[in-house]
Amino acid sequence: MSSAVGVADGNTGAEIVSAPQIAAGKSAELSVILPSFNEASNIPILVGLLDEALKGIDWEAIVVDDNSPDGTTEVARKIAQHDPRIRVIRRIGRRGLSGACIEGILASSAPYVAVMDADLQHDETLLPKMLAELKADDTDLVVASRKVDGGTVGEGLSSIRAWGSNIANGLAQKLLNVTLKDPMSGFFMVRREKAEALAPKLSPQGFKILLDLVSSANGTLKIKELPFTFRERQHGESKLDTLVTLDYFGLLLAKYFGDVVSVRFLMFGLVGASGLVVHLLALRIFLLGDMEFNLAQTGASFVAMTSNFFLNNQLTYRDRRLRGTQALVGLLTFYAVCSVGVLANVGVANLMYADPAYWWLAGTAGAIMGAVWNYAASSALTWRKS
Ligand code: GDD
Ligand code: MN
Image (cartoon, rainbow, N blue to C red):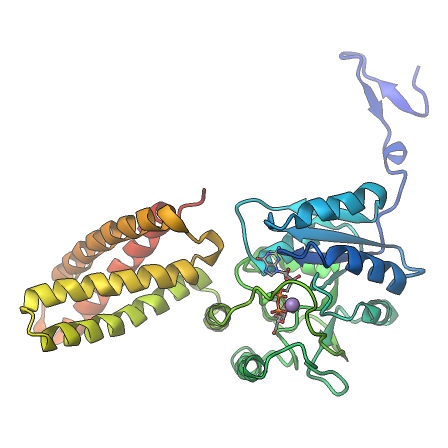
């Protein structure tokens, strides 16, 4: 009755295929995760370079594309149609380098995964050496570093960015005890099981996946750094603007405080604090212009809310950024949310205000209440997930 191929199910007549029959092939040994946004002209070149560099290695590449308008997905799919080593994940309604890397890693079943930029700035000839390091001893993570002897940022980074990147590295080393020379590198290889175990702790926002991985591991990863030269970009343009560095500081703070609050909430708080400065500046200008105080205060509030809206739109919610009419509607809902926030703030402060000696306690409680409300309501209304 039962054959080697399968067993007939008496009730349904369906055939249950035995496991070995399904698992005919074997997963690749190495997955190269290629996060991409508008890299249509780089992907075909990169696949050729990988093919050359990874001779003798059983590899696959997973392009994780955030629905690039330049058709990167289609280009990658065309290659995948005649090269089964290439796989494609098209993400819709999501943006972010870290998130794309995490999804790529989780889509892999290879024992080793590498994360590498898809824009040819990373030297693919380093991959076999990185793999050899991981396989040779008990190393868990190999980082291609621009900062160890022999490595260099070459022509790949502008001097202002190289400077900023040094400060950011220093902070990471001081605050998080991360001893990596180049914690912002976007080029590394890791044992998949290690990355998989850490994945639930990682933040999909921003671009600091390596720092996140290492600091979340809390010293449990054995790390090695190899030097490489960061190449200059040939096609397309960099997506990392200066604003993205603020997001990096958000991660540093969140990790430093042991992940008690989310990076997003911290960003929201930082933007809120900047709003206070904007408010006072605007108020001063309006008053200098002989405006009546109540009017000046109301005007300053609107200036601060507007500035907060645009900063949050650029930073806190860069992955859900609103554009065009959506931004206008967003701004209006943000005004509404913040107005209720003021009521919540004053209400709680009033409740708490029993003793004049503790005015600051009541004030702080009110401000926190207002911030929590503004955050919760604006993420549900203004920047809701579409
Ligand atoms: N899926 C996806 N989504 N990919 C993205 C996104 C995104 O939102 N943003 C950028 N990428 C892809 C790019 O297409 C590229 O393949 C890679 O991520 C790196 O992005 P670039 O925009 O080229 O970054 P960069 O060259 O300015 O920055 C490099 O240096 C940083 C440190 O200074 C990268 O190596 C970073 O990873 C690194 O942290
Ligand atoms: Mn780049």
